[in-house]
Length: 431
Image (cartoon, rainbow, N blue to C red; front, side, top):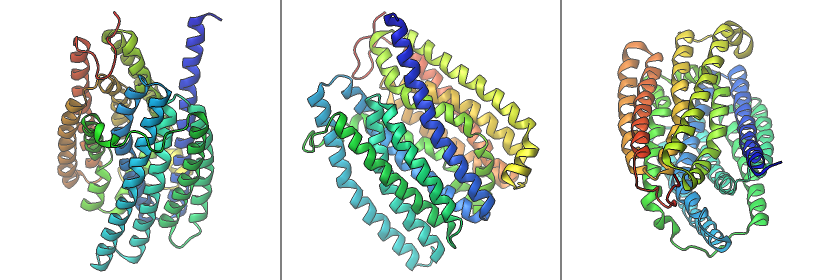
């Protein structure tokens, strides 16, 4: 096998393992959603969705702050430099998490004492705080192992996480507090999986517990803008759930989440590839011109959008059977929700790959500003549309925001294609 074929095979294995890994997580989320939809009421399922969306926010913020500067520095550092970097990042996080936990518990106690949280709701909130700490712990080591391009190690720990999560949710449906118990099961699964990942990383390349003091401050100029962009992007990609809960009710969240659950296979492929695209794009930019890298990103994005369109057509044909037999639920305006979700995800899968080119070029400040504007448009349109259209109005706002965001990312990518300034922390691209 020649060098080119060997590199190609390694590339395929890398991405196939990432897709399998995301497939496990997506299958677990699909299973959990189906179990809760079929065995609990809409309020319990809606509460679980709100918690998991909040967990998605904090892990997104962690990854946004740490991953771009970490990948950039690791690609240029020797073994000792990587050891110092990872050790410093881990030590800084361990100092922050206890402060975060105490702050959240005190805030929950105040809300409970003021009567804003009921006894059932406070159980969900406390379980969510525990799940937040465990999830951040697990996600940190996932990020590092993926930065080392070791998806097979992540796949092993994710497999155990999936088994524990699914078993925990099954048991939670037998509890008088299904949502709170399911979240506690998620916390335990994340803790065990994170512990396994940390041990694997230590054996592969041990970190220096005393390394890189003040590294969180040192990466703030890059990570801070990335974090702001991620948080504002979450505001219109997931924040609509909380807008729905406040404007309508928690049961309405269940209708949106249940129909979104049918988009899971598309999310599987997009997110699975996306976990490895940023490190890969950064490597490409050190060897090729921005024009060539952008062309590759467009091909990736277009292929995923075409796959999504074909999948949505199949779901549309089988929609009666899916809702009657699989979900055993009937939601008002379900067909409109399916059409809107299909349109949203076609935009999302294209956007999710294209944005990595702009991130790899280090243009995080422009991305943050773009995302903030898109989030504002999305939430405003969602709120106004919900007042007139009900639950489908929320998705009209999401689609508007995602479309505006994609248009802005395409504009930034085209500008970077013609830029002669190298990416932050990258070597000058070869022609």
